[in-house]
Image (cartoon, rainbow, N blue to C red; front, side):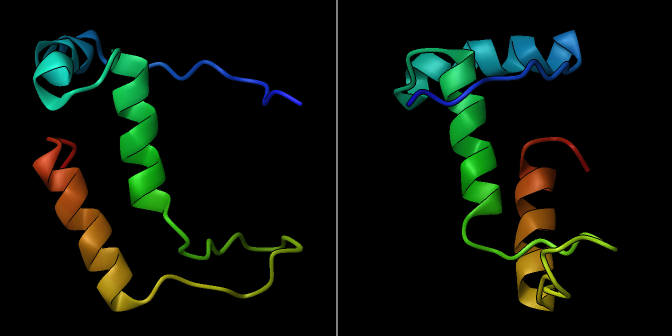
Length: 77
């Protein structure tokens, strides 16, 4: 069964930056790059969602530091 997809809007300037590097990084498209980065950021880390059935799992300090570092390297922070 195929996964359904959703649309996420990002600033056009960021999209242009992604388009400039996707080929150099070996990706076929900006979408492939973004999916790769998001999967890498999320990894197997548990996500804490207050009031959800997911429990009380939280990110460790090391996981949060790694996420912040990756987001900064991508220009989000």
